[in-house]
Image 1: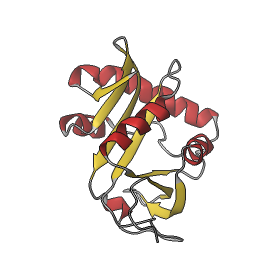
Image 2: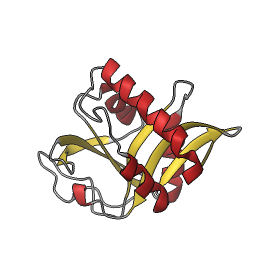
Image 3: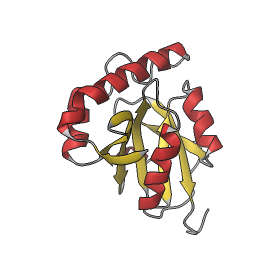
Image 4: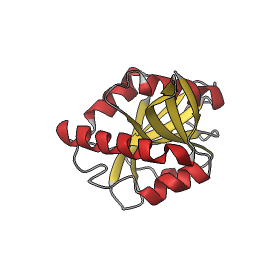
Length: 167
């Protein structure tokens, strides 16, 4: 599998992947994280335009999509019921999703992101047991609670392989 920047030509395919992911979230007891329409088309197009959206593909077929941003994430400025592992520069994974045929999507995403920066943050909904399991499997530590743009809480995680001093 390879990771590349998403292009406008990929838009329809990634919308289908997100629709599938929303269905799977509802099926596994997490109907509230993305609801019926998140991430929005406007958000996806902005991610593509800013070259922050990436697809995971093999032989030209897209199996997964995610957003990766290196630099401060405004939603992570305030953390409650805990603290970040460090204050070192970090990358943030957002909006990761895979299609029915996609296996190893999170592993591929994490390998790519870790090759860019060794300090990574991510968050997920309290009802997203699937993502929580993956995060813990791949060495992320729960750090506390953050609040996303609409004010809803998310469990914040961080993984640091950087040797920066941990608190």
